Length: 284
Length: 327
Image (cartoon, rainbow over all chains, first blue to last red; front, side, top):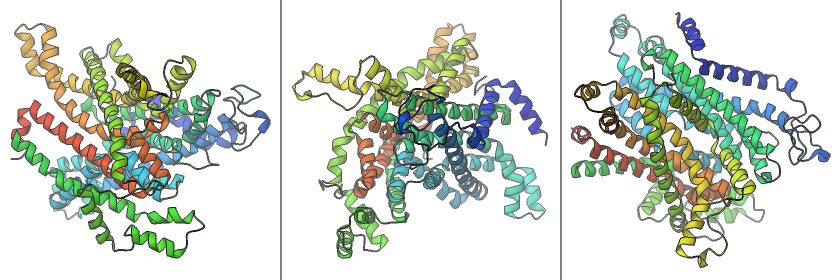
């Protein structure tokens, strides 16, 4: 197992991916240290300080219509983005790996059923499906995670299935079967570890996608509910003040952009590192 | 070719049944029934009223009966009536909104093709060069930027600061009295921002895809042969390589349909454009369950049609596909 060290070496060679990784780590730190970093309470209303531009009396990113500090709300909001990204992708990856492993390992009718179901789910515009479910459930951060996770497993399923299809006939698999290993053991200890590279890449890119979806839902008012704040919901509140208070929309959007960009860069970098055959397909 | 098209059409039937099943299951497995949102908020709703509502919408029957009823009215294009105050048929609501969304997405697609093709090609031909690096960065940024944020920024710049374009709606006041050219200009100025911004994300992914595709093709033997027999580089790239790189783009265009349709929810809501996306959003917020069901099916059917067109286009472009597909 010397790939972690090689991976680290490759990482240094790939400056953009390293930059992405740094920002991702920084975001972790910010959301973990939110109470320390935030200059104000995220929900502290100060009517005298309504809609003040950035830099007014210690409000780095200005204040919103209730005089709340935008910077502090964003710092606390980073927890929502992080949580949604990881929980949603965790759900999607778990479902995807299980279904993909079943389809790829057993083949035949099970494979056909799972793949047709996959194709079907890909027909639905994700936001449509999510909106439909949110109509019936109460909008909340947990439902948002659940729904994003339940509608995002198709890519992983296809990846894992493809990897297992190409691996299942190899000699090492036959050998372990001949030694009497159960299907579960063959899949979990011999096949899945070999298929993990693409899954890690797709999960990293998936976090970016989930953060974007969450912010879009919160922007539409169907995600995180007040008084909790996420970047999307701050933006959504700022929508009504674009003529007077640009900072309410500019900074949260920028935060989403930088975070999503970092996860994407990290994911593309990992793709290069974990799959040396694909040289020259990502950024060079 | 006809045989291919017919088989491909027949394959849509099970897909359609699957789509209706998923829609139905999604909306019925969620806790709370469609009428509860309507009655829970209404203090005047008595238990008998609730019961009557359920009977009207057939919600008191067993699930499989409900499903069969719904699908059989669906194939007769009867999507039921909206829960909203106007109680209009869902189909009318959808068909009056559909043209706007369709037109916007078609124009988006045309723009995506026209811009991403040259972008991807130039980047691939000089992979690693300055142009390639610059476009890579731009593409990554476009891909990561939330579209609604770009929309708000564009509104601030072009709508409020520069006053070049209107920031919401589809038409200006007094639209009916404009000349044909004036009507066109008015529509175009209203739709310019939403169309451009919704194109950006797909533009990024497709130009990226085309680039990596083209890089693979440039390394292939038949291009070396073409160069070896003395063809100018221009012909090698623009004729021999481009044709082969174009084929998978057709599929990608088909696959980007759900993204565009989904994006229309956000764009239309942000710019207040009365299309399918806005209809769907309004229905979702008002718990207008028949409209949600209808729009969900419609969105999936649009995607299915997009995939069908992509497959047929693929078969026209590449004879190997239509010969091999159903052997």
